[in-house]
Amino acid sequence: MLLGEVPKERADAARNRLKVLSAAARLFRERGVNGVSMDAVAAEAGVGKGTLFRRFGDKSGLAAALLDERERELQEALLSGPPPLGPGAPAAERLSAFVDAYLDYLLDHLDLVRLSETASPGARYRIGAYRFWRLHAAILLAEIRPGCDADPLAHALLAPLAAEHMTALAGEYGEARAREAVRALVLGGVG
Image 1 (tube, one colour):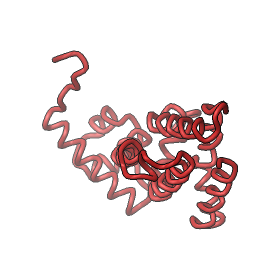
Image 2 (spheres, helix red, strand yellow; image 1 turned 60 degrees about the vertical axis):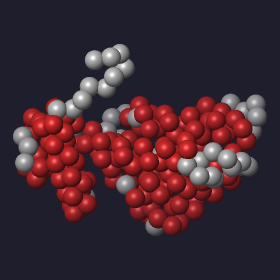
Image 3 (cartoon, helix red, strand yellow; image 1 turned 180 degrees about the vertical axis):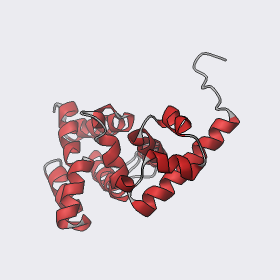
Image 4 (cartoon, one colour; image 1 turned 90 degrees about the horizontal axis):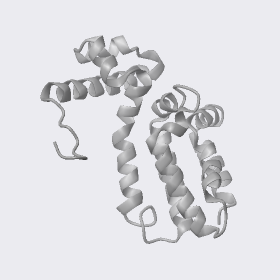
């Protein structure tokens, strides 16, 4: 194997991974994230509990694996998609488009994102996708406000987009009002 080459997944491991992800997605959709145990996922997928725990660790690891493809799609759109989400639009328009796209992603997968972000103290900030979102926001903020301290400002900008926060807002005010409140707060002072 060459340096940097990713090892190939064994065919049986790949089949099991797909069976587990399919079973988990179906069960989470039908019963909700809190209503599904790892035992139930293993049984539904037809794999042993050991296989499930070795591959995903716990339910938050399973949630992260289910979110991975959606996160990659959004990242790809930010890097090379059409403007304003992708390159080619002014930074303020790109930041607004990012917030809207992130809210779509977050609200569509709120329980899974919440599980992945709250698995342990500080989990949100260790997730690779969060680091990507923060860097993207910091780059745009530095362009919008030259000379600003963009890194902590990006963290502050992303704080209202935390799944725990959105769960509380959407639960109390509904998704539409929660979305508008977060957009107003996050984007109100950026331009």
